[in-house]
Length: 268
Image (cartoon, rainbow, N blue to C red; front, top):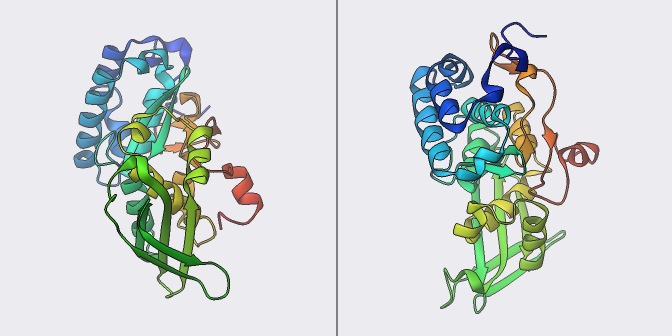
């Protein structure tokens, strides 16, 4: 077992209530959050503040194992993404497990941070918009908004245009049926989807567009964690801030699991 790893037998976080988890974040786990965060203590303070608010305001987290809550928070600290804020990342209760769901802004931040993406354009198309596209050897997307802009009940498509650092462009288009199929496979009732369907539609088409392009190690890992259960804290080495093993996928935010993406070459 890794030095410093927490086990159920030492009276640790595994048996604690939500208020006790919040206290543990501020005391026993602050150094770990700092170690995981690229900004150190400054970034850790922000993560802990966000996590404390989320723990207080999300009663459903009480059904999740404390280990999965803490480990999810540690992993989001690693990516320096705001928790349940700015549409960067969400803690989503899924049965008795806390899972991580990246928001649109979080996925965009990770893509730009990788240095492999020059620009990202994502748009939602509504009924009544002028929308034309062609895929294949002469790809193009043409879109002019209409009177239903912003009406979530009128969404028909979402699309993404990524320009890589090399200048190569990647186009992706999804219709509403495809978007809703992705939603149904994941946390369909999560606050991210219910509060901002448009942003989640943009995230969904962006994530699909990102599959075949080059990625940094950080981004590949973050996309593996999206919709995945945190590993137990036995797998976390507090001395090095690393995990021993891969997260277990519980819910999917797209039509391929991380394993399937790897098998098709999409994660490279």
